[in-house]
Amino acid sequence: QKEVEQNSGPLSVPEGAIASLNCTYSDRGSQSFFWYRQYSGKSPELIMFIYSNGDKEDGRFTAQLNKASQYVSLLIRDSQPSDSATYLCAVNDRNFNKFYFGSGTKLNVKP
Amino acid sequence: ETGVTQTPRHLVMGMTNKKSLKCEQHLGHNAMYWYKQSAKKPLELMFVYSLEERVENNSVPSRFSPECPNSSHLFLHLHTLQPEDSALYLCASSQDRDSYNEQFFGPGTRLTVL
Image 1 (cartoon, rainbow over the protein chains, first blue to last red):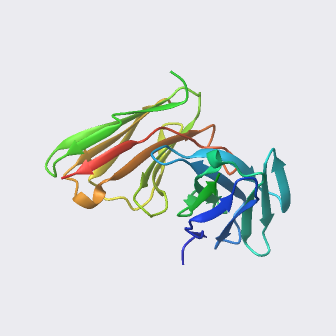
Image 2 (cartoon, each protein chain N blue to C red):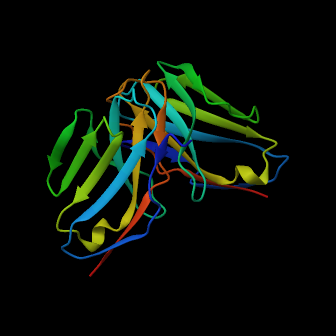
């Protein structure tokens, strides 16, 4: 069983729409959850982190965490073509020893 | 220089060569990491250093040998690699090795093993 699972996509949305990216994780004791964006040929950059159940908003981005369902999502409002990238979900294990990444979801925002 | 830098950015080596990857962070962080990113696979954590001590070795083959001479520098020494070791090798750093610390990534070294 993979520690972190994401749909590889590609997820295609029109410009201005809401993009919804999803991630599930296997370790129920995981404490913190991160979303990274990775443009083609570039290194990952952090968008948001969340560690409490509920929603956390930052500009056009909203992270949602449901620990009971072991599910974390990222919503991107008013999607722009510049948001086209691969989005990586990352989860820290219960002992804070390991950082597990999902394979990423490729997002295409069409003008 | 700011952030996390890596050299070289691209490396082509034969299976019998010995080479080293270098990472330097200018953020005053205490933890540094090596990751391997292969096509269509998740980022794989290879090594973790905290305050210059190795705290994690994620079952990495011995042909990869890390070195952390101080909190700002991290090396990955490579020898007798295999073609399947071709990948993007990413270095990252964080303030400390705890749950809520953001990891900052370097640009990576694209390694090709012939």
